[in-house]
Image 1 (cartoon, rainbow over the protein chains, first blue to last red):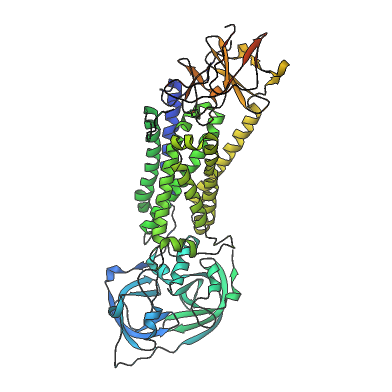
Image 2: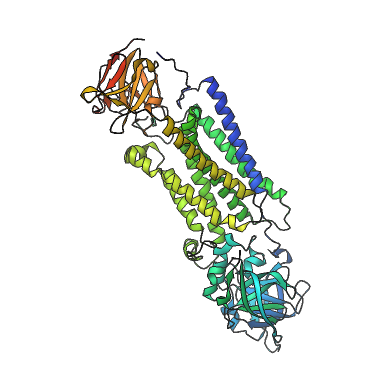
Length: 254
Length: 349
Ligand code: FES
């Protein structure tokens, strides 16, 4: 009769000595491997960019002229230390909703706006407080928005995303993993932004609109967060560049 | 084996098993969540919600990879069998880690809008017609649902309720889960990072899972159980009696594809079905402990002569008629009804 030497293990019995040391080694090895992966993967996350909410500034109140693009922007006329006059701010509400409806009746009018600033380099946004405390007309005062200055036709490479997450509401606030969130913001009327790989007149970020100056057309939604090239016209509104694109010219880049 | 269902039948080995499992997961999460942010020299930190989501997501992927390596490893080297023993705890924990990842993502990327976050999960990104920019969240959802089904049906109650073959088939969902997770990662985060450390880890893990499965498959094809040779009167030859060690068995594949296990106990041979009533574990790779055949997977036990579990347990498996001629072990390939007593056949020591 043959002899049998293979180890045998049943869960409720103590494993044989030799098997015990093997299992101990496997257990310790696996636990250490997982732990090592924790620090390796955690320690190699990409930089999410430098945009952020400036809660540290506290709520800011400025006055200026509203211009509907149709995303609302504010040309600051009376600023403060944080938000100087001449600044152009994109406007938004809390969460993933814009303020196009609220701001529409103030188009071309002088207003007082209060909210929290979101800042990412030259990209500035103001998240308005609710109701009149956030945005209200200043009666009797006249002011006009600066005349738009056409900068001609451009073909740019970069990415379409929502201005709010990019400005720092989320870090990271762009890229393919963030695509659904960007689309959700844009559906909620948050201003769309084009992040250009090469600066245009010193700006990396441009507000992006449809061909006829409408909000980002649905045809461009499939390309949100993707690396693309697109053609259109650039116009300067205050110190904000606005890129009106023809979605038909979008090409996906590698 | 149980007569009454309790959430978990604890024993020392399960505690050890869970200790290492929890230690690995806790180590991973602790370093990822609390230590790694200090190593990153970012001007502004990643949002905690995103950092947490990444930690739990990556952890779930690695846990799933380890779980899927255990099966083929145990087939290649019997010493890994104990890792199989408590694998379901590992699976349940993975489902919880994956669910936490889902929670962070849902409450961040899909929240804060006017619609419910469950709706936004469906309609935010509808670019289903493209690869880059595909709503990769859908794959994550498939994986999560699969893992949750597996976790909820992991208990023995479900095994008994659904019957072992159905249960086993449902549990192939683990492969659906893994493939979906791989797609979720490939179309999601891998498309969206500059540092490729995770890409490398992902590839190594996935390739390990795949190659271990291939190797175990080839190994089994080469050194799988032998086919029983036909003999007179429709009986089949299994092996020589002297090949069977005391308290152990030889397995053979019968003409109808079933497997028979011929055991030697006190120099008497008995033939029973090789498939355990619990989860089809290979009884023939088990051992007779205190007069009972003990399944190598979870330790269910059977009387080798009758295929019956000792009272109060009620599991029964088929037995086979057996004879020995010129030292050759013969069995009748027509199985007896489960639980039928067969007189063992005496053989020389
Ligand atoms: S004890 Fe679970 S398969 Fe045999």
